[in-house]
Length: 185
Image 1 (cartoon, rainbow, N blue to C red):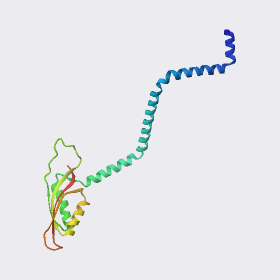
Image 2: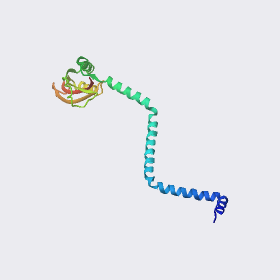
Image 3: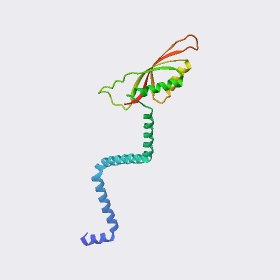
């Protein structure tokens, strides 16, 4: 076959020859790049995961401003319920109000606050300990405990000792409590 015959054959079968050459080129490229396939798949999977994470972040951020406002309002509401560590007179007013509301005779004492050691983890809120002696009827004491539990400050009862004072079923009760109120400095 001479050059002229080859050129004539190529001119007659341009599409077939082009397809054969393209197929050969594709096979050579696939062969040469086949060792890069696992790396390419890994990159594709990583990009897919990152795209899914970004999509989830976009969906989650739709109501972010409302959620932030809700969290800020909740924190403000919590801070309103905190006592202040250094304000002894104001802290004792809470117990005097409980005394007038329940009718039980209260003797509150704030236990001196000891600052945490320098190595202790930093906290936003500080427990303030009170020693409380209450004298009254069973109903008054129970009302006092309920008001402490659901009162305006966050309260935790550490110890509770109950002793009868008078004789009989309707006698007075002496209750000694050690409680913690959550506060801020």
